[in-house]
Length: 185
Length: 104
Image (cartoon, rainbow over all chains, first blue to last red):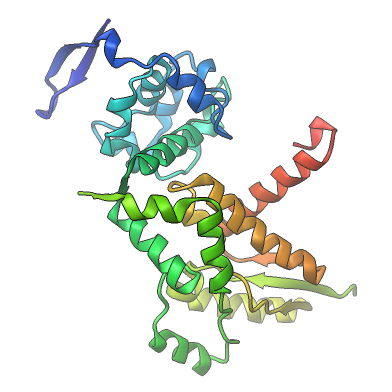
């Protein structure tokens, strides 16, 4: 199978041969068991998602159509070591416009989940996760802001039960994953 | 006028970045006769955790929904990210409980 891939120089296309040994035929079944990503096999590569995607308008490498095709082919290693999947902003335009009702954004989310399970996570997400563990919220809200809230006459901010937050981390097994993940970039 | 009573769910972004939005919302809702109840135990809705671990997102959102159900009140949220996640999880729960597939 021959696939054209854009090299880092803009505009030039290079032909790369995909080896069948790189493909994992069971990968699509693994993905289709994840909630939201069941319809991955229904994609017929019309390209509506890519035409509407606000990210692919500005990025030369992020193409939702290509990601779905790669999932169908089972190019597991290529997908899960790819920084491109973290570009999706989850605006769900692709899902709204897809004629086959393939949950593209959910498939990208499934791919991200698998990447984290493999042990790679962007710095921003790690920061948010550690903030949630510390305070129960994704951002650390400083004392200055709390003081300002009081001045404006707003009621005190709800304080999350940190014990139950930690419990959720343990139950879902994410605290174990968090220990071994490495940062991307 | 029927008495409207909601639990207010602020989420993370509004107290951090948009306190003006909260102030104006509270003032408008007061004039409209909507009573907002504070819920001290709410945590993050789970939206930032979705790309990292889907199960954890579901549990976080479900925890918030359960807290609201204990109070027997509906949630009002000002943040559309929180709304999306809480609505999604609540719908999924209803979907699993009912045998009628049209509910999904």
